[in-house]
Length: 188
Image 1 (cartoon, rainbow, N blue to C red):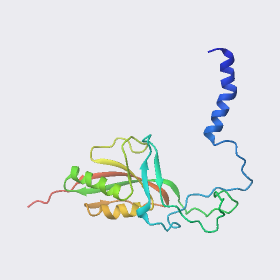
Image 2 (image 1 turned 120 degrees about the vertical axis):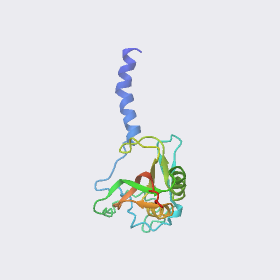
Image 3 (image 1 turned 135 degrees about the vertical axis):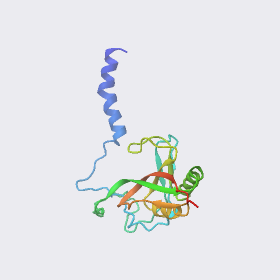
Image 4 (image 1 turned 180 degrees about the vertical axis):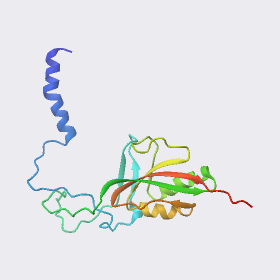
């Protein structure tokens, strides 16, 4: 490659790439605030219609939910108007990590049933390693839930055995490390 092509690429290619990846150079009005994700208390959606699905790349999750009719929005409003954003709840985080322990009699069968319950509750199984969930054992799975569907997952999981799970704070998504532990057998 000659030196002129390298200079041209450096002068035009890198800034163009930054604009394309950065979302362009659209002008944003002073004081314009993008609206934050709605908290679970503000959303009155049937949790059966919310689903996480894996994109073709496999490392991206796509949230599918029914279209909502926002009251007070103009037809062309893209949520970037000057309306003040609702304050986020205290202690809010976009993602929360949870470690759930499920006590079952048979670990392989229990793990299969727990994955079925997770998928039925609009959860997604993550099969690639992610930060904070390293060293997964054969009796563990990593799951991701929309915070609106997570409580129904916990309720359904209780039908499989004893569930030990900490309280989850305000968030949009819950990443779960599900560990299955064999129940101690009662001695006769």
